[in-house]
Figure 1 (spheres, one colour):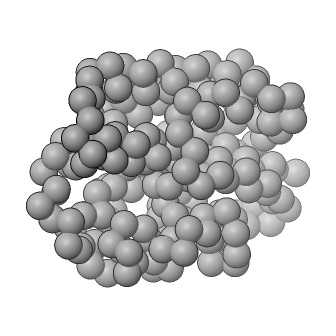
Figure 2 (cartoon, helix red, strand yellow):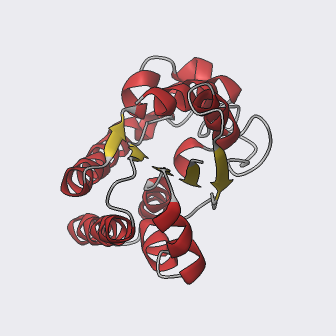
Length: 206
């Protein structure tokens, strides 16, 4: 029996903010793809919309979640976009932000997440999405370059942390590049059903 632990958040939400729910959610679509290879698979979707790296590191101290991670055969993470939203809001509000300290904090959080997962479960495949840039698809293109710079820095943090703990990085940004107008929903930030299907398939076969 395989147990999939899906810790999902902003990075692959739908425009309805239902990453954790529904038959067309990322988790449900991903589960469907996995069942083709693991017919006995069952899964627990622990997705929390808007979860930051700091909050996930904290949640991994909870006994219930630690028990699930310890038993899991597949662990899936989509983390980091909520952190970028926090940064973006601060910048738009003209607040002073120390970006070096901000990304250093994310690296610390990712190291804590990786250490906790690998301490509990040293063998399960852990798949983690990198971050895509939705801004080419809509009215936020004036912010495209600074957003891409921040995304690149965060993806660097994700890659570094993944290498430390033998996580599999799913190249979400690459598979969506050039398809933004097809896969981004009407809010110009979140994935529509097609986008979620693409990402679910990428995760299943990574």
